[in-house]
Length: 195
Image (cartoon, rainbow, N blue to C red; front, side):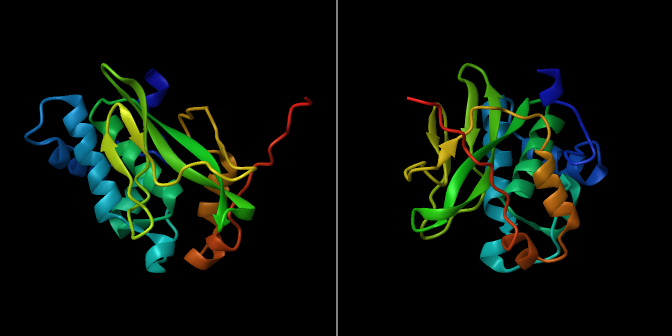
């Protein structure tokens, strides 16, 4: 579990800004599940999704997501991981491959989190931000993610990463505007096993 608690260049939970916010969110809670819920709901509801609100700058590091109050799903997952790790709760990054609209290609990766919660084990959450079409929630052990995998070619990837995928980090660090990210959303092509 150690790697899911580490601070890094992207999940920089040892920054003063993140540490202070993590402490505020944990205040009044004594159980990890309650702290995790408070952190999740803060990121989901208080950090604006860059595409939904048409916001720049593009953020990647957890502390920048918190500082500017905006991020794509990937960046929001970095902040949630940092807030949880700052509170001693193991958290990793997960990805889905989803259609961008209407259940037809093109596809792109979508970022979310897995949190280690006793007694449930790894529990996935999606702090992307709710809307008229999205109703994600924290209700362990039941997963209520932003997007179900329904179309051919979509996938839930089973890996739980301690750090963001390099292609995600490069995209966020090298894009100047939310539109630049939207025009270059990353994808991983699925290799079908022979029948």
